[in-house]
Image (cartoon, each protein chain N blue to C red):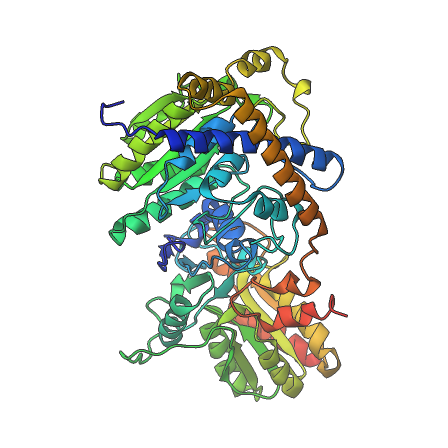
Length: 339
Length: 255
């Protein structure tokens, strides 16, 4: 990376660390809630939190985030509250999307977070479209899209990357290479030496960054965003990581892979890396860490208690928002569910 | 682009080539408003030339409207003449929801009527009676409307009055307009180019039976494309024509 790469300030680094810790503790609680039947499904980002938090932390307020279903750290970095996310995960009436999507599929107009697409790679197309619109209107906004290694085999990856390259669009592609597309290992997904190498064919830079090094991810993203804004076009950033958990809580990864690679990856945990770095700078100590974890744990308790009490969306809302105005046939069908 | 406030218009060169975009249209475009709890709308118009009659073979002739009519969140439009084409297209461009706009390519150059240069719209979701008659209602859309009108001319020589309805918008369907016509004629024949099984005619029949059963004096009938791939050499035999339509009308009248 070039010398003018923007580095995060100490305060910013501490904020990134807090958000990574929050993501780790939050996800552990969500998985417990899943096991208790309170949340139907969850896609854990354990081991990948640092990269997700760091890249989204580089966004400006006016930028747009296009997350996928394993982007919890990025959502928190963007300003989604644990309370709001729990409403989404439980599909309560307080969810900003009115309980319309399966867990982790958030959308927030206020925070400029696009609606999460379930088909992998679709968000790449949408981020490219947003960036194209921004370029057409000469706006200052850039788009950041997160996707996994599996998405690089999708039609959306090709369509989005291709058009983004052609028009030099202000979009940053973050490919979290966690080595698995559900059960399919990377070697069975592509014969490319790296995923970053794919960018070359589309005519823009692709780089590899250690996903367990949040400072490196932050700097790479900040530089890519600066490139995007200055009209130099898109960047593909491949963050190397490993999906420590299953694909989702409905998946048992032991059926298709051994524990050894995961155990090795646990030793290069982004959370621990950053904690040790902050301690070495004199910015953090064990006592502060214990206090932080305690505070976050209590906040999670409060948020979970509240979310469990939130009512379901009203039955009458089933037919809302299909169209801007409810057509006659939906008005008729609506009578079938209303008392 | 919609998130940014633009109103994109996508043009699919031929409707036969829309299938790679099916996921984006059905899972994304159609559902974005609903799944975001109304936070984001997608006012996109997807234009595509559709239908046969141009010797285009399997991949330049299809009528895939039913796939989209089956999709909650979309509006589906097909004009039958230049006036409606302009008015419906302007209405679609100003609509807050995604509109699939089929352009029946066989009548691009054959239907000639005056079209005002001024700004006007034809409201989405409204059918039109393009020929009044009292004996049989013929329900058509797109390039089948001029065919129905030709059949109405022929039938009138035999003293048969066909009422021809141009649906113009397939989703949402203007069932009230159909019901009013069938209340008068008590008989209906549905006409479309698309294959019969689960074609749009199947939905029309279902809704007519639900809404107009006691008005009917004869079984509903369909004149459609066949459940075969769209052929090249035998295109004329595949496409609904005046003879097949008139035969069906006579059977309906005899029932």
